[in-house]
Amino acid sequence: MKAAHTPLYGPPSVLDTRIVPTPTPGPGQVLVEVHASFVSAGDLRLRAADFPGISALFGRLMFGLRRPRNPIQGSMFSGRVVAVGSGVRRYAKGDEVFGSVDHGAYAEFLVVEEAGAVAPLPAGVSHAQAAATPYGAWTALNFLRDLGELEAGEKVLILGASGGVGQLAVQVARHLGAEVTAVASARHHDFVRGLGAQHVIDYAREDFTQSGESYDLIFDIAGASSFRKAKGSLTDRGRYLSLYVSGALLAQMLWTRVFARQGKRAMCGVAMGDAASTAELAALLEAGAIRPVIGQRFAFEAIADAHVHAETSRSAGATVVEMVPPERPLAAVG
Image (cartoon, rainbow, N blue to C red; front, side, top):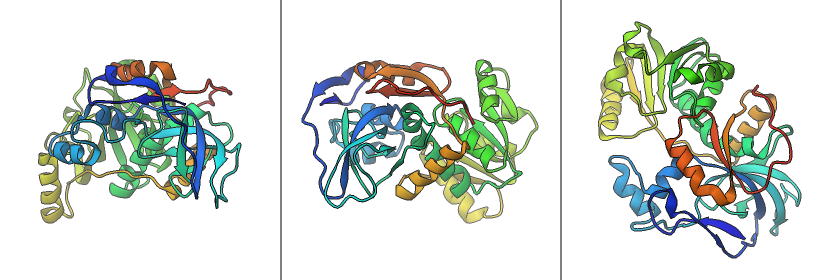
């Protein structure tokens, strides 16, 4: 089978497509023909060993000191089951599924644990959309609902609202009943309004900290602010959540957790998927509560170009690599 190989850490050019043995499913596993994979921010960081701040050493120890321990990367997938191992009951040959793995999704075939982070593909959802769902939707649910405890009627500001994670954060926040202000470039304002944002801010022309507005929760997906800068725009019990871990943020988390339990809080975390959370995402997709928008598609052979685009482009939506050409049109955003 063809697989995208990452022999060394580095820029997108290190990626090359090689022929490697097709894996065989063992007991409790299924073999999936991968139709699409989402190029996530995590994939970009892992390819380049771009582990921020204090996580640099830990990242190298975990994923490989000098080169990737698992050279076939990619973590989000959608495709069709083509074989099953012994003891598998939930899936059969021909079933369409989506989900996530630690590595290996940048390939034509992928072995997945039956009990892992995988679920049936909902009707009316394309493989590209399904592959683009887990990373952003898990992150949004984990940070907004579970960590930030966002409640209906609260006001939330989302920095980086038009990207692969941001677009789903807007939809999840609206699903949870929040009043959403999206921060994005002016050219993406119609896009984020279409996702459900009631208010928009052009970051190039307006500093949200100078607007006089207060928010119950500020979700910084883009690493565009900090707790210190955003603190004045939080309500008395507001929460600042960031995807970017730093020594300063960890110190602020500790300080606000110990000394400001009823006041403004700094927060960060890690979103991890499993079978139950993937099933929840499938239900949200089926209900139309979330629906990722695909910004750019790339053929598998152009995966290095997909990484360049994901790193440098300011276009809205998700960047997807398609191993198999799409078989059905994209559904409208719900």
